Image (cartoon, rainbow, N blue to C red):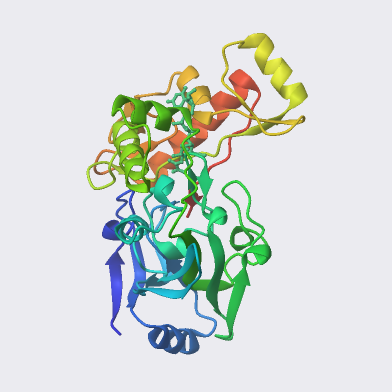
Length: 337
Ligand code: EPU
């Protein structure tokens, strides 16, 4: 176990921000994790997973623990399903590909989402009509203070739209070490209702899609809209889609009858933040080395050497402008550090 002082975090965050960690340690085993947690006691720690949902606006004055635990195994099988346990440091998309190779269904719509297994439950990752909670069984986590191990069942996690208990009540108390998911081996439940998926399958003349076909369609859609973090630094959707009340929606519709919307309930309507940001004139705007992606206004990008502070200031300008034009507040999905 090697601790490196004054380490650059650029390779470890998908925004590619060159912030420094006071010290950094790669964690490859549960034993190493427990040892370092015992030693650290009350010293400040910063837990890093795939680095795909954070914007570093400053250096980290703490020991950064990079959770790099690896391993995937089937822990039980039943007639139509398997429970697969994946360690927190496994890359999410590689895990999806592994599941497809084994013909395990349930997460094909979540293909190509950046990040690691261990951080997937924290924000209940979701795309194209599927959320992690739909296949989640449980996760194991280590308490940072006393190293006790706790299993969180789905019912403990308080999952919501990009939300979970790990972002709320117990934020910063646990390190997720592994996740158990229940996947189908037969009679896969396909989620093809999302318009863009249907269109993509139609374009390819696929009438009876397999889970692999759906994954391929999702990959094609994502690649056409979302920048590859290996080429252009980004953290996927920077903002959450706001959920507004029926009264607020009536007001929006009066001024902008063309506004897209998704009814969640009689009193709650989701508005795509990408539309609000595009309408506010930010789509494709570039300032120095940072800006708003030209194909998806929800994504802020680092073209090379932007600082986290610059990107955060742009995010604040977007929030203020959207509030002024539409009287709607948009919250960041990405964690601002
Ligand atoms: N739109 C625009 N302009 C834009 C982008 C979007 O007008 O530049 C409007 C269009 O009306 C479009 C609608 O927004 O039809 C929805 O766009 P899209 O299907 O791309 O989805 P989204 O709401 O922008 C959400 C998730 C994505 C996920 C997609 C597909 C959030 C914050 N984002 O985006 O998740 O891939 O749905 O399910 O919920 C992520 O979290 O990093 C992420 C990429």
